Amino acid sequence: MRATQFYRTAVLAGILSLFVSYLAVWIRFINDPAERAGSDFIAFYSAGIVAKEQGVSSVYDVEAQQAVEEKIVGFPLVQGQVLLFNHLPFLLPILYTVMGENYVESFYIWIFLLLIFYCSAILILAKYLKNSGTDPRMIVLMSISTFLFLPLFFSLMNGQDTAILFLGIALWVYGFTSGREMLSGIGLSLTTVRPHISLLIAIPMLFSHRKIFLSYLVGTGSLAAFSVLILGVAGTRKFVEILMISAAGQWHGMK
Image (tube, rainbow, N blue to C red; front, side, top):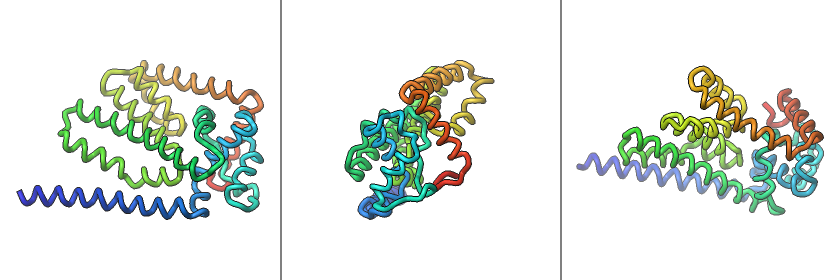
C-alpha cells in the first residue's frame, strides 16, 4: 500500500515539476525579444505576412521574407541570415489566417493551434492503446508523458510544424491497426510536411498495403495540386528555388 502511494506521489511530483519548469522556460523565452525572434517561428510568420500583404504567389520570394524578418529583429540581415520558409505550400492558408500584425500574439495563436494538433494525435493514439487492451491508467500516464515529452516542448518553443507530422503518423497508425486503410493513407499524406520521413514510411506500404499507398498518393496528389493552384506558375518556380537553396545547406538553419 505504501509502495503504491509512494509511486503515485512520485509520478505526480514528476508531472508537476515538468509542467512548472516548462512554463517558467516559456515565460522567459516569450518575453525575451532576441530569443523569440531567433526561433523557427519567424519563418512561418514571414510566410503568413507576405501572403497577406503581397499575395500567396510571393511567399517564397527571398527578399519579401527578408523584409518581414528584418522588422521583427530590428536590424538589417545579410542574405544568409534569413531563416527561409521552405515548407510545403498547403500550410499557407493556415498561416494566412493565423498571422497578424503583432508577432507575439501570432506566436500564441500558432502555439495554440499546434497544441490542438498534438492533443488530437495523443487522443488518437490513446484510442489505439484502448483497443489493444492496454490498462486505462497506463494510457492516461502515457498520454501525459507524451504531452510532456521534452522534444515536443522544444518544437512548440520553436513554432515548428512537427505537430502536423505527429498527427499524420497517429492517423496512419490508428488506421493501419484498425483496418481503416483509407484513413491510414490520408493520415500518411499529412506527413509530407517532412517529405523524407513521409517517403520512408510510405514506400514499404507499396509492397504490403497497397490500398494505404494508393490513399497516400491521392492525399499527397491533392495537396500538391492545391499547392500549385494557389501558388501559380511564378510562385511554384520560386518555391523550387527555395528548395534548391535549402538543399545546398549554406543558409542559416538550412542543414
